[in-house]
Image (cartoon, rainbow, N blue to C red):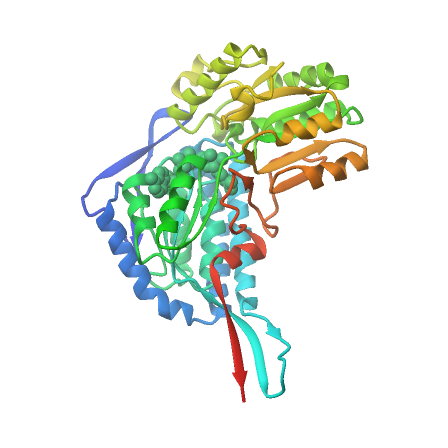
Length: 483
Ligand code: NAD
């Protein structure tokens, strides 16, 4: 069964002005249309901007506690619709029911978190240098902001931008990714039902260039928060910089886990396996390189290959261990990287093929794949694959492992598995990554801590989540009052 969604502009669900639409199909059963959405264009962007700009002053002057109450209520509404949102997410994006349920819960928690934070949004009083003088700062909203989001966390990422933007008093135009836009419509319905005034949050679907392009170029936009690939994000940052808009881009990763001889190798293999194959490897923080000390290399390769072989791949609705790729394009890209890995001389230890037969033929299923004998300058060790492919690289010492971990253009998340505290501490201090962990997988981050990358993983301007989320969406005014 398929549902038709609209753009949400000025508190109304509308078709695109051209009347054009596009379909989203189920990655586990590609002939099943799960939803239909407006294929919007610049005219729709302008309509959304009219609404967002008109709503700005009133929303900015709405007291923080009142803004927060609406966010909390939106969280409650989403909680009441958790099962429905989870199913929509699985059917459009393909992740497993457990993964999708966790992601919807994350969105609920973010609404509740920023609902509370909206009360504290204000500023700081500083000591003045003379009597009869008050000196303090005041946080003000940026104005109207553009949010552009990817398909791989199609509810959590929109909400971790929307909630702080609204808490800080901004109005919003959101463009979700076309692969998985339906679950965002549920979020907008929850905000609407919670009493969000018309025009404060607007969402438009359509192609990146036809909707995202005009949005980031518009002079009526005061800030751009983008998550997606480094190629598109670099272009977004350059465009936004032309008229000095505030911009943050969080982008790709090539995240390593270092495994040292003191580690329990079975545990290390599970840590790496969950990081590499969870969400079908389609996480920006997915573990795509295991950098393993030579003393435990063979043992680790055998253990992580067994782990990969043990996973049941299937439809996310059946809550298999690993779902399909989101699209035929993503599947083709992963299969191409598997060919590249083999042609570069790496040894295929597990997986390596598209799954076929029975229900597999209808979807974009690929085996969890492990390559050993990978040189760190190989393409499969340097480029973001965004699929369930792990490259295992050999290191001859801790220093070598650290150098290999840093010898990549990306710098999003990194971890080490070791029982040696000195190694662990040196690793988190010296690794070039925005998230560094000891004895934990590279994926996953709690909602109240800053999230963002180093190097080509981020513009490194502002972090997302936690207090940092509010920093991006506000300007600080310094105020002197003499009396
Ligand atoms: P993408 O860059 O293809 O698309 C991201 C968004 O940008 C989509 O909404 C798309 O429609 C839009 N877009 C495309 N072209 C545009 C243009 N010319 N102007 C404006 N907007 C445009 O990324 P994707 O395939 O949706 O997502 C996967 C990527 O996202 C991976 O590289 C992954 O690492 C990254 N990602 C990063 C994080 C993070 O926090 N660092 C989190 C999740 C995903």
